[in-house]
Image (cartoon, rainbow, N blue to C red; front, top):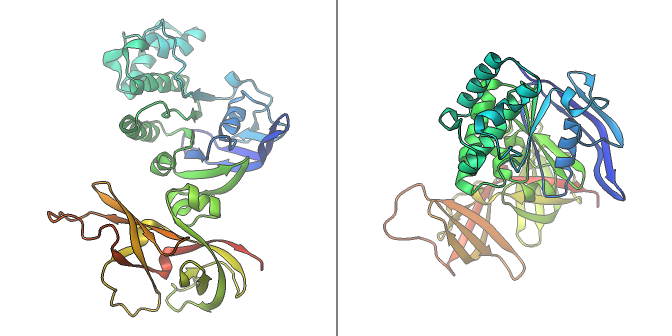
Length: 379
């Protein structure tokens, strides 16, 4: 496996009275595509700059393959950074921009020609070698920046919101390109983004950050399906989030062998009594935050006939249907204060228009397995 293991241990950084990072620790595996995800100001770029050597932490340690890199300048760390604004030399051609790091090292001309050719081929820009950056699209400029960062053969590539300046379709294309490049060269990628879909699409693992803290580290599936806090549930995708109280807990008979799963009954003021399976140790009387994703919910105008005890069922009125072609998002009003989001995918062609429209009375149902307790508080 290429690349380096990166270990961040209890790193803190303050700018005056502002604490950008608060005792942050994480381990990034060799060859991993690892994303730092969070809103603006959460500390993700500061952490990336500390790994790169552009910032010095107030406390903590950063190691690459067990070597402390904090005393080393950026050019001695075997890391390279791709910036949001490309940072290309406007007076140099694509070829010369990519060749620049090797010319600084006074590499032989034959080596420069071979290596530049290889990396232009990697980013599919051979035909644009003689162009200046002003003649390129945003996506092409970003690929030049990636080739220039990779030609030094770093063990860790740091990407600081590299796609944020591109339009939506180009971002999607460049995400696929980044994933392809990572798969081909196999080094460690650390990717900073505020875009949840970007992180979910390409990452092996994600660290969700907010206000200088790391709230959860996990695979995209773990982060989305099992959020560790209210903030993670709200920030990653869309969800319905409500506060409630535990009424009862019983061992779930349908759990797989060896799994410690319980069925909890919650009292949620806006929803009534709700069943949810959980692996958390909870007990009656505790306050909890409950989440269920909009796409997990079945919306119908007819009352479902199921008698399964693990199915939740509530009623409401369609407040706003938003049609997006491949799906419709419904805002269903349950009361004056409560609105439920539901997403219905359009997997089958219909020439009769929508079967659920504004002001329809509807039933919403979902399995106890599809909800999630995201936090537990003592009463």
